[in-house]
Image (tube, rainbow, N blue to C red; front, side, top):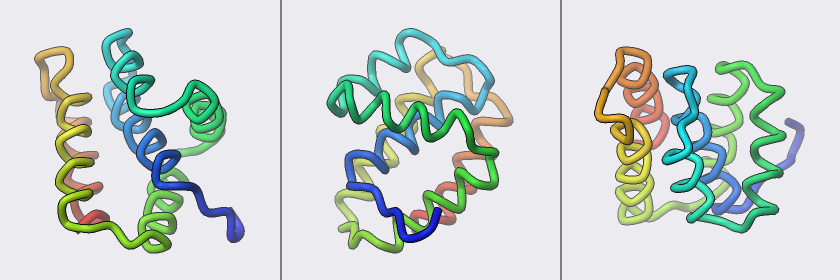
Length: 109
């Protein structure tokens, strides 16, 4: 990604999509939650973006875009809460999800 920065809404959707994919199963509940956070066009754009990325590429894109935006502590807290909603949507918190959560925490904070 060369100087291609996303809007905060696009970044939010991308992060939530990555969280939904952490356990290799995107549930309808997770997708509905993500769709409630942005326009259909934004969700489709970011779904297309993430489909071609490895996890390392995804994390680098998130890190680059987070550095580009000036998130307030309140915005970070809200994003973290949304990530947890995705992780816990199936009432299970798998090792892969826990690991991704820790990595994203390190990037966010």
